[in-house]
Amino acid sequence: MLSFSHIQEWILSMTRNQAHLLLLVVTILWGFTFVAQKTGMETLGPMSFSAARYLIGSIGIVPIAFFEFRKNSIVIILRKDRLLALKAFGLGCFMFCGISLQQIALQYTNIANAAFLTALYVPAVPFISWVLSSNPIKGKIWLALIISLFGSWMLSGSGTVLSQWGDLLVVISVFFWAGHIILISNITQKINMPFQLSFIQSFICFILALCFASVLETPTLMGFTPAIPELIIAGFFSVTLGFSFQIVGQRYSDPTASAFILSLESVFGAIAGWLLLSQIIGTSSLIGCALIFLAVIIADVVPDSWIPLRSKWRND
Image 1 (tube, rainbow, N blue to C red):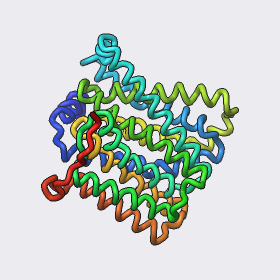
Image 2 (cartoon, rainbow, N blue to C red):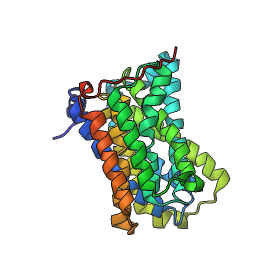
Image 3 (tube, rainbow, N blue to C red):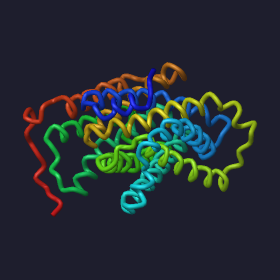
């Protein structure tokens, strides 16, 4: 019988390849969640949907987070390290800003655009990391950055995506998602309590979304009822499983590699929109999908020695 001890043992012995496979599972969950986010807003406002989604997600994490808490409490660590506590709070804030902008954007743009423009956090992560740490960017990352940018542009079908309000909101959300990825990598190097950390960020997101929903929207029970299937998909599968798996996987991967793998969310999002909502993927969009896949392979599989060029600029 599977117990928390078995889960914890598996997490502690996880290899880099296993972590990357887990992150790939996350991208599939998140990609198909785009459909639930889109259809769920037929009866709910974006803040109300997010609040309910993260409440369900938080509740789903509680059982396994409780078992983890009994063995090692994250509260004790955060009380001793205020900077770490601030980062944990920031994790929830970054998530809230990213998901809120994305959720609002889905009212105005299609799933393929939202999914692939979200993938622009791929080039954002190494650049933000470079600014913060002054570490030079590897040559293969430069190449993958260029390919991913061009792939995202191809999928948008136009060079003027910023002229659309929804697309602009998605682009702004990219910086919050990039910050979220970097912050997770930083925190998980110091503490290995993924489920408690996942609960903290999800619950913070729920509280913030609830506050905004109370001020900006007037949700009703009649509005929530038709959206129950979408809320379960977006809450349990995307938040409970997806964000928990992300925290586990990122402990054994670096932020840049994680960002490239997670960018495959855009591919699965476009596929989900096509399969479930009949949103057509054109030739340019298919080329964009292929380029994003290629960028992930270059960043994560190609040896550094194949593309030895490194950035010469330093943040002195």
